[in-house]
Image 1 (cartoon, chains in turn purple, red):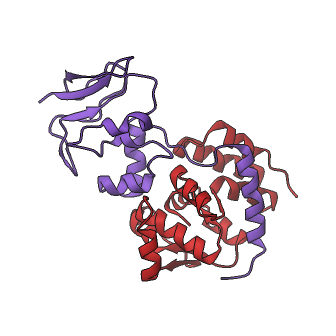
Image 2 (cartoon, chains in turn blue, green):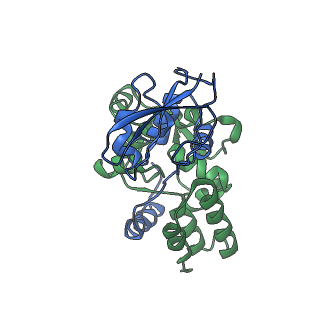
Image 3 (cartoon, helix red, strand yellow):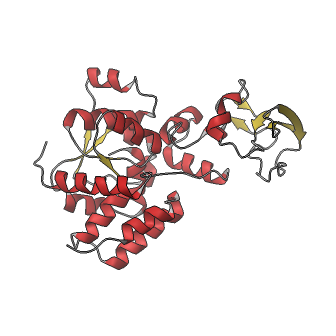
Amino acid sequence: MNVVISQQDSSGKLFKQSLVPGTVSPNGRMLLAEEGQVSKHGIWEEIFVSTTSRKFEDIAPTVSPKYPYDIGIYAPGRISLGKIAELWGLHYEEMIEAIKRRGLHLDFGPRTPEEADLELESIRKHMRRKSH
Amino acid sequence: MNTSAFSALTRINGFKILKQLFPQDIIVPRGVLEEYDRKFVTLPSFIKVRDLTPNQMSRANNLDLGQGEKEAIILAHDLGALLLIEDKKGRKICQDMNVEKTGTYGIIRVAFEECIITRKQMVEMIEKLKNDLYYGQQLIEWVLKARKR
């Protein structure tokens, strides 16, 4: 069984391409799925790979409805790590490793140093607080 | 404490630092422990595990997050506690609900400023998180700005 990937051209139009599982996709992203690999939701037949500069969060809704929980839907700020771990039936640490293997980046922490500065004040305020 | 922070603290063996900064209660909702694979960590005795009330659980279930994340946010909200959370979506929801938050980066920086850890330890910890959890360069630089008080 080949892996069918859905891709977008520069105009955003979707097209499909059949690839041998485990090979490198046209955009250089290694395919995670191997032939016969079983996820919580069945055998992988289709995964979504973006060939554009658009973020996953913009295109995630077009993931195959047959397997809506492709790991590619992990986009920081859009779905939490805990939620996607739940969907995949993995523990948290296993999910972190799966995301890293897929070549996706975790994106933890504040957006800006200013946001982190505000948090410092919160830490110091709570250090002075009494027990709940 | 949320699962993402629990994971980060486990990686740097940072629970004792947390205890020194917050000698009062350090609370983990049960959902965090269930979300996290217990084989990776032995829970220190000073960390208290809390179950949510049925009312809290009902409110938690309205949040589109993992079980540990939503339980942690509701608990922090109701206790007026500072929540340790790293995950972007969870942090956004904290902001919407006026829950005060920080992450392990903040704990590391304050621990150095309060002379609980040395600069060398601070650098080692933040480098570990940079490699394991992809802490960004901007965040690394922010931590390394720390000055002893």
